Length: 321
Image (cartoon, rainbow, N blue to C red):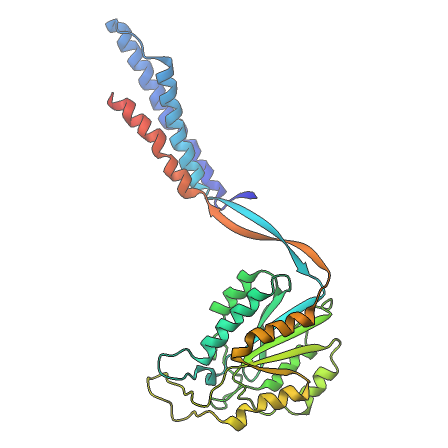
């Protein structure tokens, strides 16, 4: 648990405490002279000290609020050092298809699945990538679910990022997944590597270089495809089905051919739990390390500001007596 200040120079406000205290001291000296001249008893020292303390507390609390104090609580959790997982989300335009206008699109369902996958692997670092005619990493494997979920919510969407080249509605190229094996998507120490690909499977043919890349990978990568596809789905962006898109079972079967070429498995979206279980089985048990990460952050400025009301109320009460 640590305390930090977002605007530490706000403490300079405390210098202003000298002004009301000086005014109060001058006022009390003048009042004492008047009471002495009139032969009236002097004010209680406790009363004077209490009022002075209250004035100082008002300014002090306002100065504290001006520094914007934040209480950060860190948490330690175990993190696997030998295993990493990538969730690859298809963001091609065909993922806008749904069963009817207003129904959840393929992308909506896949995005929900991506959240479930991330939450299912607490100790295993999880990364996020998007898939169109290229595979792009957005989050390197991490156990901080907030980073993953923030990128999932803000950084990607259907055609965000768009494909590198304009093809048609069906721009998914599963063959581009070969970069998982040829580029540094996984860290060198990750011996157990799994990729869960959430896609409608409407892909261009992969070609021989796809399987060759996975065969030549330094370490084997298990790829699990989860397909979000139904022959009755259409794209209803304008409320009516787009004439330029119609599901093609022969094209959708491309994911099965791609999977067969690298000994991967294909699951239906209703079998997501089975895909997660398969990934867990691949990871098994392994070494972990403790990793501290920032937990909840509590801003204290509202509380410091609210506390000002206590000494302020005391000052106003004594003034009106």
